[in-house]
Image (cartoon, rainbow, N blue to C red; front, top):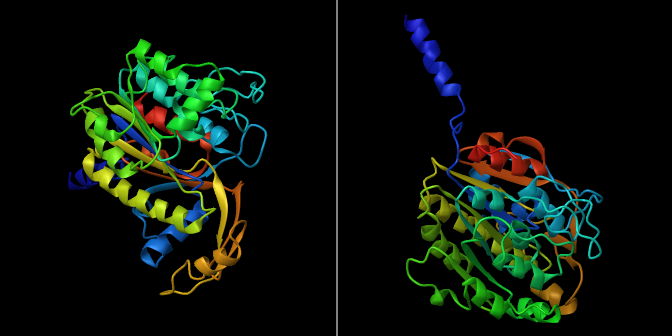
Length: 367
């Protein structure tokens, strides 16, 4: 009898601890945050490898970032694969590979955010990149050319599914409005018609508001935006989907690596703000970047020599003792890391399209 009890207990302990459905999913996207960038960010922040919070997560994989036609992805194709489960071409946002960039629309692809809208969940998109840029835009819009910012924002106000993104915070206002005007789209009139005021600062959001759109020009604070959004999204008893993007491009390695360190700290705070028994946190990147750690010594700043190098070489590739950066996207796999219900499927070598399937499975949904 004791042996049977012991075997039962052993089986129970070895069952997946997260083999339950997620009520909430937070997709955390480090734009251009490849493996080498994550490694360098840890060294910048803590003078040691593997000290970022995301590097402590139990479930980790390497995710392929190739497109339907290219080995090296841009953010449009990369994010489309993650949020729809379908590979498309560079420059195309949440349309199928039958799209021809800027010339022919492809089949609109249902995104994970649109599935959440259809299920009655709260939805959010937050980015410190322009809110109609490829990564956030792929969550809620469908266009054949990522440069169509006016059309992308127009689709935010005229959603295909549900009542549209509940919380949308980010920068890029002037360029969005200018691009829309050139396409003869009056965003102000459309916002009034749809009853969705587009605010210019986070300060304008009414206390307790469960739906708000804020598009700023300058001074966007990702940390504050996320902490404002989460309480609103959690008000929905059915759950929520939230995508948070932080720019990890390292053309300027000091700025890019610091943003990633700060993003990681924010992710740690987010984990303390949600019920982790019912929330899947999924971290990944849409594509990698050609930063490489090529030297350096423990105890010595990883960015030593950068200011002097840039004084002599204000543009172009970076060559300092510890780092080299050539300023372009690269095609190797990126990290996918997860914690919470459904994260047990984040392991091994994956396709970027598998991340969509992991999120759908975590919610218990079928395509």
